[in-house]
Image (tube, rainbow, N blue to C red):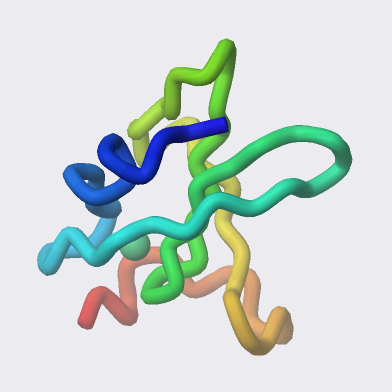
Length: 74
Ligand SMILES: [Zn+2]
């Protein structure tokens, strides 16, 4: 698990505001999810991989438009 201390200093590298990330478990793998852009950053050996290229893109609320990449960087 990722410590709260680490979580508090991490921010999403894909968002200009660097919003805080939420730990989630999907398919028995841990991720840090950004509620703003929906990216999921994998956690490998308890080390979060904070790379946009490695992130899984997922909309937090609606999964309808999967192809909007950098259009909504607000
Ligand atoms: Zn983000």
